[in-house]
Image (cartoon, rainbow over all chains, first blue to last red; front, side, top):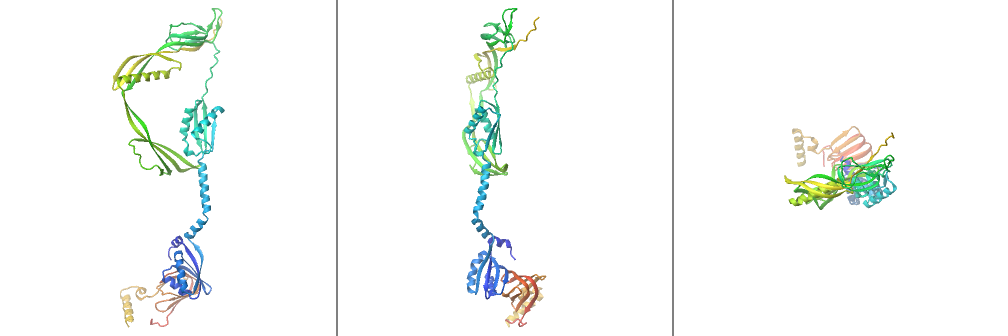
Amino acid sequence: MKNQWIEFLYGRVTVKVSGKGIERFLNVLIRNGIHIWNVKRHGTETITFRMRLRDAMNIRHYARKSECSITFLRRSGIPFLAKRLLKNSGFLLGAGVFLFIILFLSNVIWGIEIKGAKPATEYKIRKELDKMGVKIGKVQFFVKNVEGIQRQLTNNIGDLTWVGVELNGTTYHLQVVEKNEPKKPEQLSPQNLVAKKKATIVNMFVETGQPVVERNDHVEKGQILVSGVYGQEGNTELVAATGKVWGETWYKSNVKLPLITNFKVYNGKEKQKQSLLVGSWEIPIWGFGKPEFEKYETEKDVRKIHFLKWDLPISYVHRTMREREEFTREYTNEEAEKEALNMAKKQIKSELDEDAIIKDEKILHKSTKNGKVILDIHFKIIENIAVGQPIFKETPE
Amino acid sequence: MAKKWGQRVRNWMANKMDLPQDVMMDLPRITMIGQIHVYIENHRGLLAFTDKELRLLLKQGQLLIKGSSFVIKTILPEEILLEGKIDQVIYLTDNPGGKK
């Protein structure tokens, strides 16, 4: 007997033959290379057997010559299964579409929850998210990744100190920490204003309190500028001294700047590649071939595809390759000096209060060593030098 | 006469060269597995088939198999596998000489 599965694959039919001279008919079939099996006798003039589907077409030709009549009873095997499947393909299609819809809906944003924000801030965040395209009903792949959302939110909304973005299933959870602008504490406790560093007084605006120093006075660190002890001697009152005392202060700064600097810059040319990662096997979808850049950096963004609450071992990978160019900046000595000075100014500014003014700068020393310009700069700065210092009530003697 | 000669030569060869008789002499080879299977090689066609009887044409004579609930599992030009309950295997030879 031959392998039944092969016959199953090609399809087989059960044939009923009735008439006279059935044996002769069978002999004819066999001699002509038609493979038959499972021959059974039913009554005197009927026989059934099974045969291959591809032989079934030829059998009529032989039957016509004999005195038998043929009927096909059962059909089985892959060709018939396929036919039936095709007929019922609606079900299959439905099942497929159903799975696809669930798969699709599992990757859609279904909720954005914001915690820890005031209504006003929450509104701002929602607006910003809308601008980014993070909306209910959007597909997650086409939205920035979590880190990107986090970065953009903190950058664009001033009221936020920190925002934690977490993608949990189909919902974005945003944990917000708002900047609590410190309220100016009502200085009710008596205080003096003292100098926070060595300076020469330039200007004074005293709101309350008794000024102790005058313009152009030289003050040391910790020296009282405005006293909170108010009134004449013997009849004093303790108040909280407030006001601003502008003093000229000095800073020294040391800057080094190399004359030749190498930069790596992106020149804007990029190539996008999309692919599907199944397990560890990557199937490219779009963007083939190697980028024609010599030097480039690749940014890889991997998104898991969810199914209901599970992560499938399939991810969507988006690669961006950016061409990188080396760029060399060369300064002449003069340019370097200028640049170094600017740098120093910026550095100083970042250390000072916002209302401080750089009055003057003076280069004390400059040298060029190992391809670097080294500058020692002296800054004259006018800033508020007054800081509060509480007065402790002396017990009356 | 020539046919007879050929037969004799073949018979002699089969004997002397230790070759199987069915190959040399065009005899059927019948393999039985208990009562349930009969496998016949080298038959010359189906003569009659019912569920109690199978009659095969051989080169010389006929083979009659009797039993019950017969099913031909496979049938090829020279081979046949019969399944069922086999009671008898009978050779029908009209003239034992093997006259055509």
